[in-house]
Image (cartoon, rainbow, N blue to C red):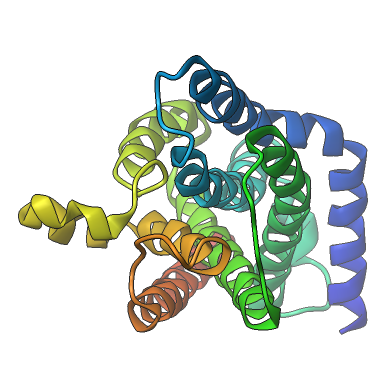
Length: 254
């Protein structure tokens, strides 16, 4: 436990040193999107003002999940590829699985920080009226944790499979479809007019994160049923954690 705490403290210190750059990378695009679609266009009458309430959960979901994924995937690609810094960590008196768990904790922590920055800024820009009870706040905390864990684990899978030369291409090819088909800009429930598409997007883990935030923040709007949200988040989290830790251990001993 002492070794795990020391590794975690080191990574969090590095993250704190680079925090402004990490936040800029993660929150800039969502906030620009928020400003245009949530602030400017409703005032121009181009889109309905009610769209902002539908958009806020998706913006928060994108910010947190991308932050969590990048916080794990990018350092792993560098440490396994260029710097070989992972070899120093493997010499520490801790199991390989402990090092992998520490990486997941760092990813979850950075996602929570991104969410704490993006949510109030987006809420102020959009002017969305949120009426959250204790149950809604509890659901928000649970969805935030599960979503961060899911994409930290997904980032570990990516970081242990991809070579440094390919990481830019992988992110471009992977993230664009995931974001556009991830129900960030529209509720999953409204896709019932295109049934086949509504079914296909269920393979996208981002759908469950965004719908979870929609369930917690705007329960009065159409959203996925709670059992499907939490079931999807938990199943994907466990699956990617299992795959990620196996790939991490295999890559570590190679």
